[in-house]
Image 1 (cartoon, rainbow, N blue to C red):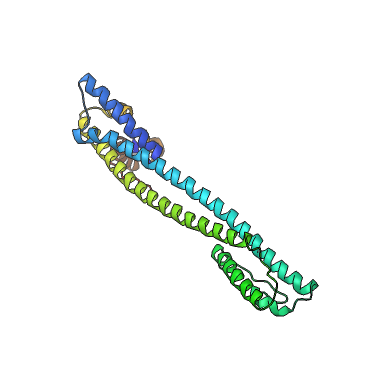
Image 2 (cartoon, helix red, strand yellow):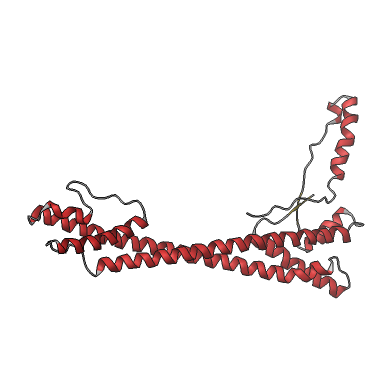
Length: 261
């Protein structure tokens, strides 16, 4: 039988909590299998991992909300920028305004700018405000919404600032989570080691039954049966000791503990 070490936070917490409950019941009955340091760390480690999982979940939720708010802010600003461009092009085409006004708004006669990211839209909003001021000074009519465009620009900047903050908080929470998982896995290894040592004189079946009450899970390792009648005598004799060794290998053996990234 192979011990299945926990590979996610829920299983880690469950194992730690189950082990603590079994340890307390054992103390009441006058039998303990865990070292004092291991037993004392179970509750605090489980509590710390639970808090860390909650912190990560909250950070993820805040980051998703910031992403949604940023996307909405980008859409509003895009609408204001495109409205300004459409206004200028309409003035040139239908109101007889000179095409010389187009460069103030970063436009060409047959082309409008293609902006690839949020920072580019934010920068274009600043350029349009500045360009509109220059156009007015040059004698042209203003083409921007003097309230809506600056407000959309400021809203996007605030959304981006909030997005960066939530991204940093999520990164920090995940770093803490990795550290807490490592310490939880280390404690679980000590827990399993204590149980192995305390139960070393008992049969494999009894070891497994008791360890299961501490939250430890097992996976049976199957061996390929050997058909001795279908093999030559020399082969049967060479295979038999190996087969017996595999059966003996069902005794509990140390296993590496997988750690979440």
